[in-house]
Length: 400
Length: 226
Ligand SMILES: Nc1ncnc2c1ncn2[C@@H]1O[C@H](COP(=O)(O)OP(=O)(O)OP(=O)(O)O)[C@@H](O)[C@H]1O
Ligand SMILES: [Mg+2]
Image (tube, rainbow over all chains, first blue to last red; front, side, top):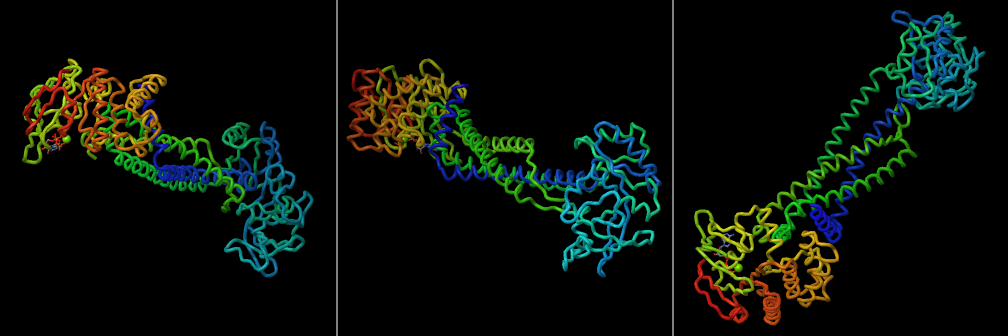
């Protein structure tokens, strides 16, 4: 048995070494491209998920969101609740937000979007918006006549943002009129502009809680409290933890809060991915099958001779299987190289999605899965033609 | 060793009787020539003796083994260990060098590297190809290729060397050197040889000449003492 494998390896190696270089290179290249195709799409999909998660956590929702219980519009006793939650180990910050739909007026232009009331110090402990100011400054606690505006909402002179709310060119120091849902109107000076690349955030604006509570007549109340945890990815555990501290309000993870949107997107992506994987693997089967089939048909006579001089057909079949394994292994290596190239490029020049820039996220499991399925597929596709020719009658094979 | 062999090819409704009942016994150390007109069944007989084909009826016994009773796998092993076959058109493996062609079967038999290289090189030298070992088939002349094929057939010291018109594609000078080689192997190593030929001048080399006519033995001449 062992010497059989040795002979198979010997024949396979000589055939690779002295056979057609062109065909070999082409086959390896095709396998490599199929490999890239198998790894690339999943890496983009998981990149989208990573981007969405980090953007949501960093700019929009924090890790968890506490919302008013069923039937109420606001959370009452915000200070107490904040204190209660912040004492939980692993929770690094909370930020109460008041949310209102507002209309902004600037030089005869108007736009409607979300206006948040925040406590600047608290907000800094949860989101990173303050680090993403492109002009001016973030709010400070005492501000009552200041507003900071997202880059999309601020807009650019003369550019309509294709349906997104835009004031087309507001700058730091300009005055903007804001109409609240209760009919009140205030004029604010633009203190800063921020850009996070999350379109939901970049179309919004922020004033201080102090100001917004006064306009809306609220006291120690909030529409939501964002919660930041020390590590990402353990939101479910913290949710249980918070509830166990006797919090009566609704607690949602950022995933739950963003609703089915991401889940749905991921599901659709996964369907696309499954189809693409299937097609790639079918192409791999066909290519390997054709290559080995042509190879064996061309060598029918040689296979007949090998059998005639006493070489077992299993040795002959194995020599083709080993060739396929070699081609697949080299193909996968080249594929890993190509994929590293594509990934490096896309990391330097990321694809921009509505949720933010997407970097390919190559998971080791995706690579292993692709290598595994490529090997599985090529083994089958290599074995069958070799087996069919090798069990042919010796004289028929030798006559050609 | 071969008894009452028949081989019938069914071609649609027509039956071709390639062998109609051939009985033949070859003793150890004999050099038997099989002759006869084209289509008389020489190759068919040799294929059956070489375990490349099965007769329609009859029996074949080699070294006391009823080879027809063996499974395909055992027949392959039998070819590997006991038989050497030389084809009319050399039938070398193009991707291998002369030396590799010769030692391939030793590799299957699990010989050690030193052993099979030594032995194969030795046989190649014996057939006069000591300086052509690393040449591939495309870099060898017809006579050289045929000698590589003979070396390959001999490398495992087979019980019988079977050769089907080994000189058919060679000029008479080269043919003579091949036949001289056979005669020498026959004499020096007591190698049993069964060879198909249709050239009259080959007769002087054979110990015994079996002439086939329409699938039957027409003539059996003892021409030289073994
Ligand atoms: N595979 C086959 N199918 C049908 N008939 C065959 C087959 N092989 C050989 N024959 C027939 O069997 C007969 C004997 O053929 P064989 O090859 O043994 O002749 P031969 O004596 O070797 O002739 P030659 O000297 O031309 O090589 C011929 O009539 C041939 O047509
Ligand atoms: Mg013939």
